[in-house]
Length: 586
Image (cartoon, rainbow, N blue to C red; front, side, top):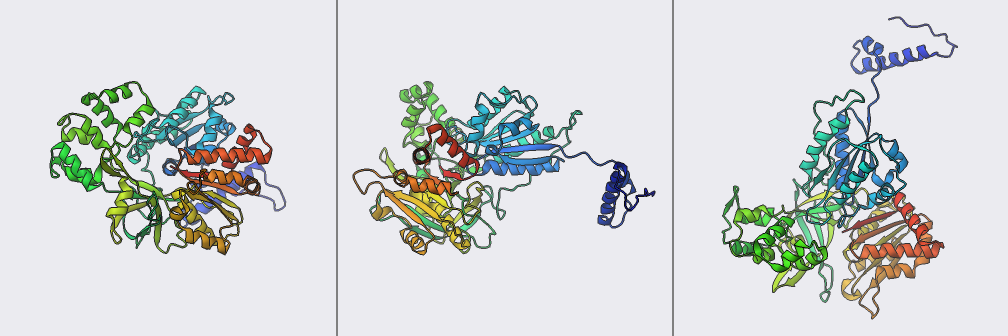
């Protein structure tokens, strides 16, 4: 091999630098391969840089983020250079500079954008949004057909990107709650198209199977860990209008790991009494064969028999001849349909049709798979000693002379005794975490069972020795019976871990007092904490409490900061961009 002469005191010219780079690369390869000759490697031209692929996600509970990470793992296997970003982390200028984009987004509530996609959507849908003729994109939407606005966030983004001139790599895929297989199949079809080389249009022959990043300890929704329920204890008082319970699952040797802010998925079992009523209505025995499985088993452990599916509602309407249901459905009145369905389960719907209107197979085919229920974890692994804690309200009510109950909450409360087993898995929520800065202040708003993740946050900060101040707004109906974890919170206050505790018990006085009331009463201090870098967290009911808290926060910022509504909204948007306004709402 001829080595060009390089004078000791001379600067390298371009040819010498190129030769040296190749020589060093070859030397590195030869050392790594045990001394094999690398002359060919040194002489060969350097490989072209990997083509970038931006994978953008919008998520409320972490599912879309996990799919995005799986997509990135597969993209790397295709020789791409993927970059995964939350949608709100992408400006319109950045988006306009991108060339290949895959969007994975869930839909929140009744067709709304998830929290970490709202700012992106506002900018994308604005009249000032840039043209995107240079962008190739594909959208994977996650949703639930049980809700109106199924996959609406994905549909809106897909349509708007097209309106702005972008070109689809592949047709949008809308996934129901059992999204894993459908998402994997779509990625398997779409990523090779995104990996086509510029100009030659030749896709790779195949895409590797996604690397699953969504499980901890090997346990998942399809492979839950059978955990022992070590503690099942009522928290609310005997005179409370609610039944809130504290649960602790023993993780044993599962290797299952979690962090404060994550959720625990619990696989429920349907109420055997309700299953019996279905069997009676269908005129079938528990052992009736349905596709190789006993009907009783299907109704108990495999199918959603409480909440009626959209398919069941539509088919009952077609066969029942119920004038009210037909009127509501044919007029597309969502509020009227919600009012009609209020308190009704699938058995109530089935009873609207004549006896024998459905065969067993027809009825079963109209039901959705029984789904896990996700609950915010209320413990820190640093203090829970091999356990995971939940704080759950048992849902119970009477309708049409029949006692009803939440599928999972009453199963846990009534039919899983201490020492019993339940299938569980961790659902990571990386977007809802304790501040990384242990000196940063933290404001938490969590009435009722919304206190769950904040109990975990406080335990976490205590175990870490964090010096940052902590402020909790908590409340419920009545202090005497609904002040759950009172002893713990009082101890945290005495120990200085909980800097401020503001309580709002709505029915202890004539005028209703809520957490947002206490926020406004302490608006000056709350705004000062925000100005000093505090993160603001909310957990609980999305339909009312979270909206009211958001409105109160806007009012406080406007008043204390001397801003109009527009400037206050910009301030809140800044908190969201800085990941200092985070919500775990349901």
